Amino acid sequence: MRTISVTAPEGAQWNVRVVWAPRWRALARRFGGWRAKRTGRSGEVVDGALQVGDASTSGGGGGGLGLGDEIVAILVVLIAFVVAVALFWWVLLPLLLLVLDLVIVLILLAASVAARVLLRRPWTVEATALGHDRITTHVVGWRAALRRRDEIADSLRRGMRPVP
Image (tube, rainbow, N blue to C red; front, side, top):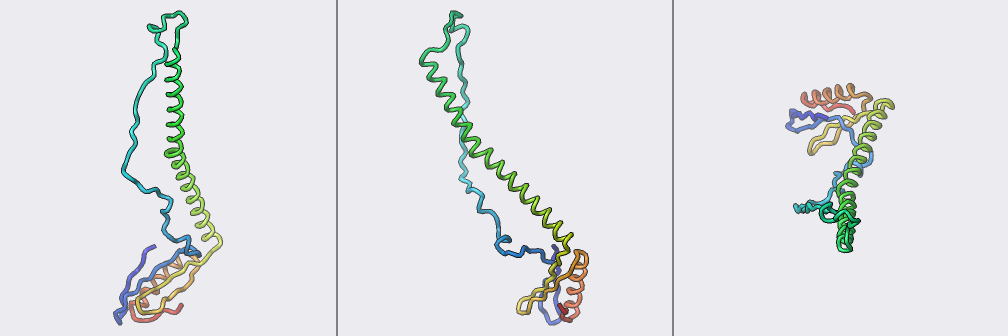
């Protein structure tokens, strides 16, 4: 919402704006406590391959893996499982929660705009200046609130105090 700054003839600097603030101040606080602090470290991924029973080493006579090879294969599968769980926990789950948060915020935004427009909740037009009382008025309709904002700014510029 654009704020109009005007200077009254007595020299006071007035800011006139259309306010759309939640009724509860707790909702208007800055969000961001959910963000993790970044340390700047990045994990390294070791790229390795496991070769299981080659035709040249198995001899074709029912060879296959020995006991040592089976233990290595089990360890590699366990490490791959741990890496997959860690990838899900620290990358995919936060991304899914972020997308879910974004969807919820968009739904709430659409619902609040629809409620304000359809239920005709009045907009608050306020004029503030240091050392002066705050002037507030409620106007139904967005365009009417913008017109009232301009009228208040005009009357302040001419030295008249608007009537709330």
